Image 1 (cartoon, rainbow, N blue to C red):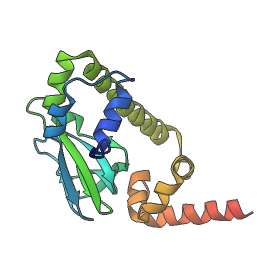
Image 2 (cartoon, rainbow, N blue to C red):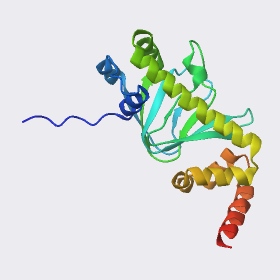
Image 3 (cartoon, one colour):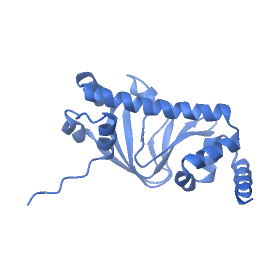
Image 4 (cartoon, rainbow, N blue to C red):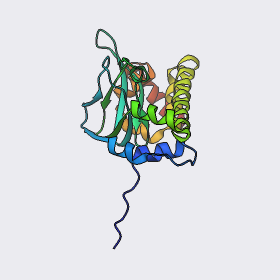
Length: 202
């Protein structure tokens, strides 16, 4: 009797798609280096200002990626949920440190891999270089869209855009966290939500 093969990891699925159909050489080497972390709500994947050259993929759960000011003020740059990947780009450079922290909103299961291994494979194999380049473009596109919304939309426009693009995710995020992401106070967001609901019911 043949054993049933294990389903691909979230990282394997992401990287295979990013490689555009090319086989990823030395995958067993990466599979051995993959670590799985389970984080309860309020727990952190990593803190701000630390050396942490790792890339993460989300198997399950929901996390917030936040900047912390010196006075403890939190600004939420983005959220990560099932099938997404994240890393602090600043921390991937030699001697670099994370520019933000990552905190679980829901119980979360993460995979992580040392970026230095991925970079070494990219230097040796075209498929790995292609995959990393594609993932970098995904990251850049997300950042560009976020900047466009912050610069061109008002708070209500940002709320409508977020809910329109990711309605299921919007329903999972606590309103106080969504407010910090949109750049408004929780009271201000509540007013926006009520105004939008009234407009939709008109």
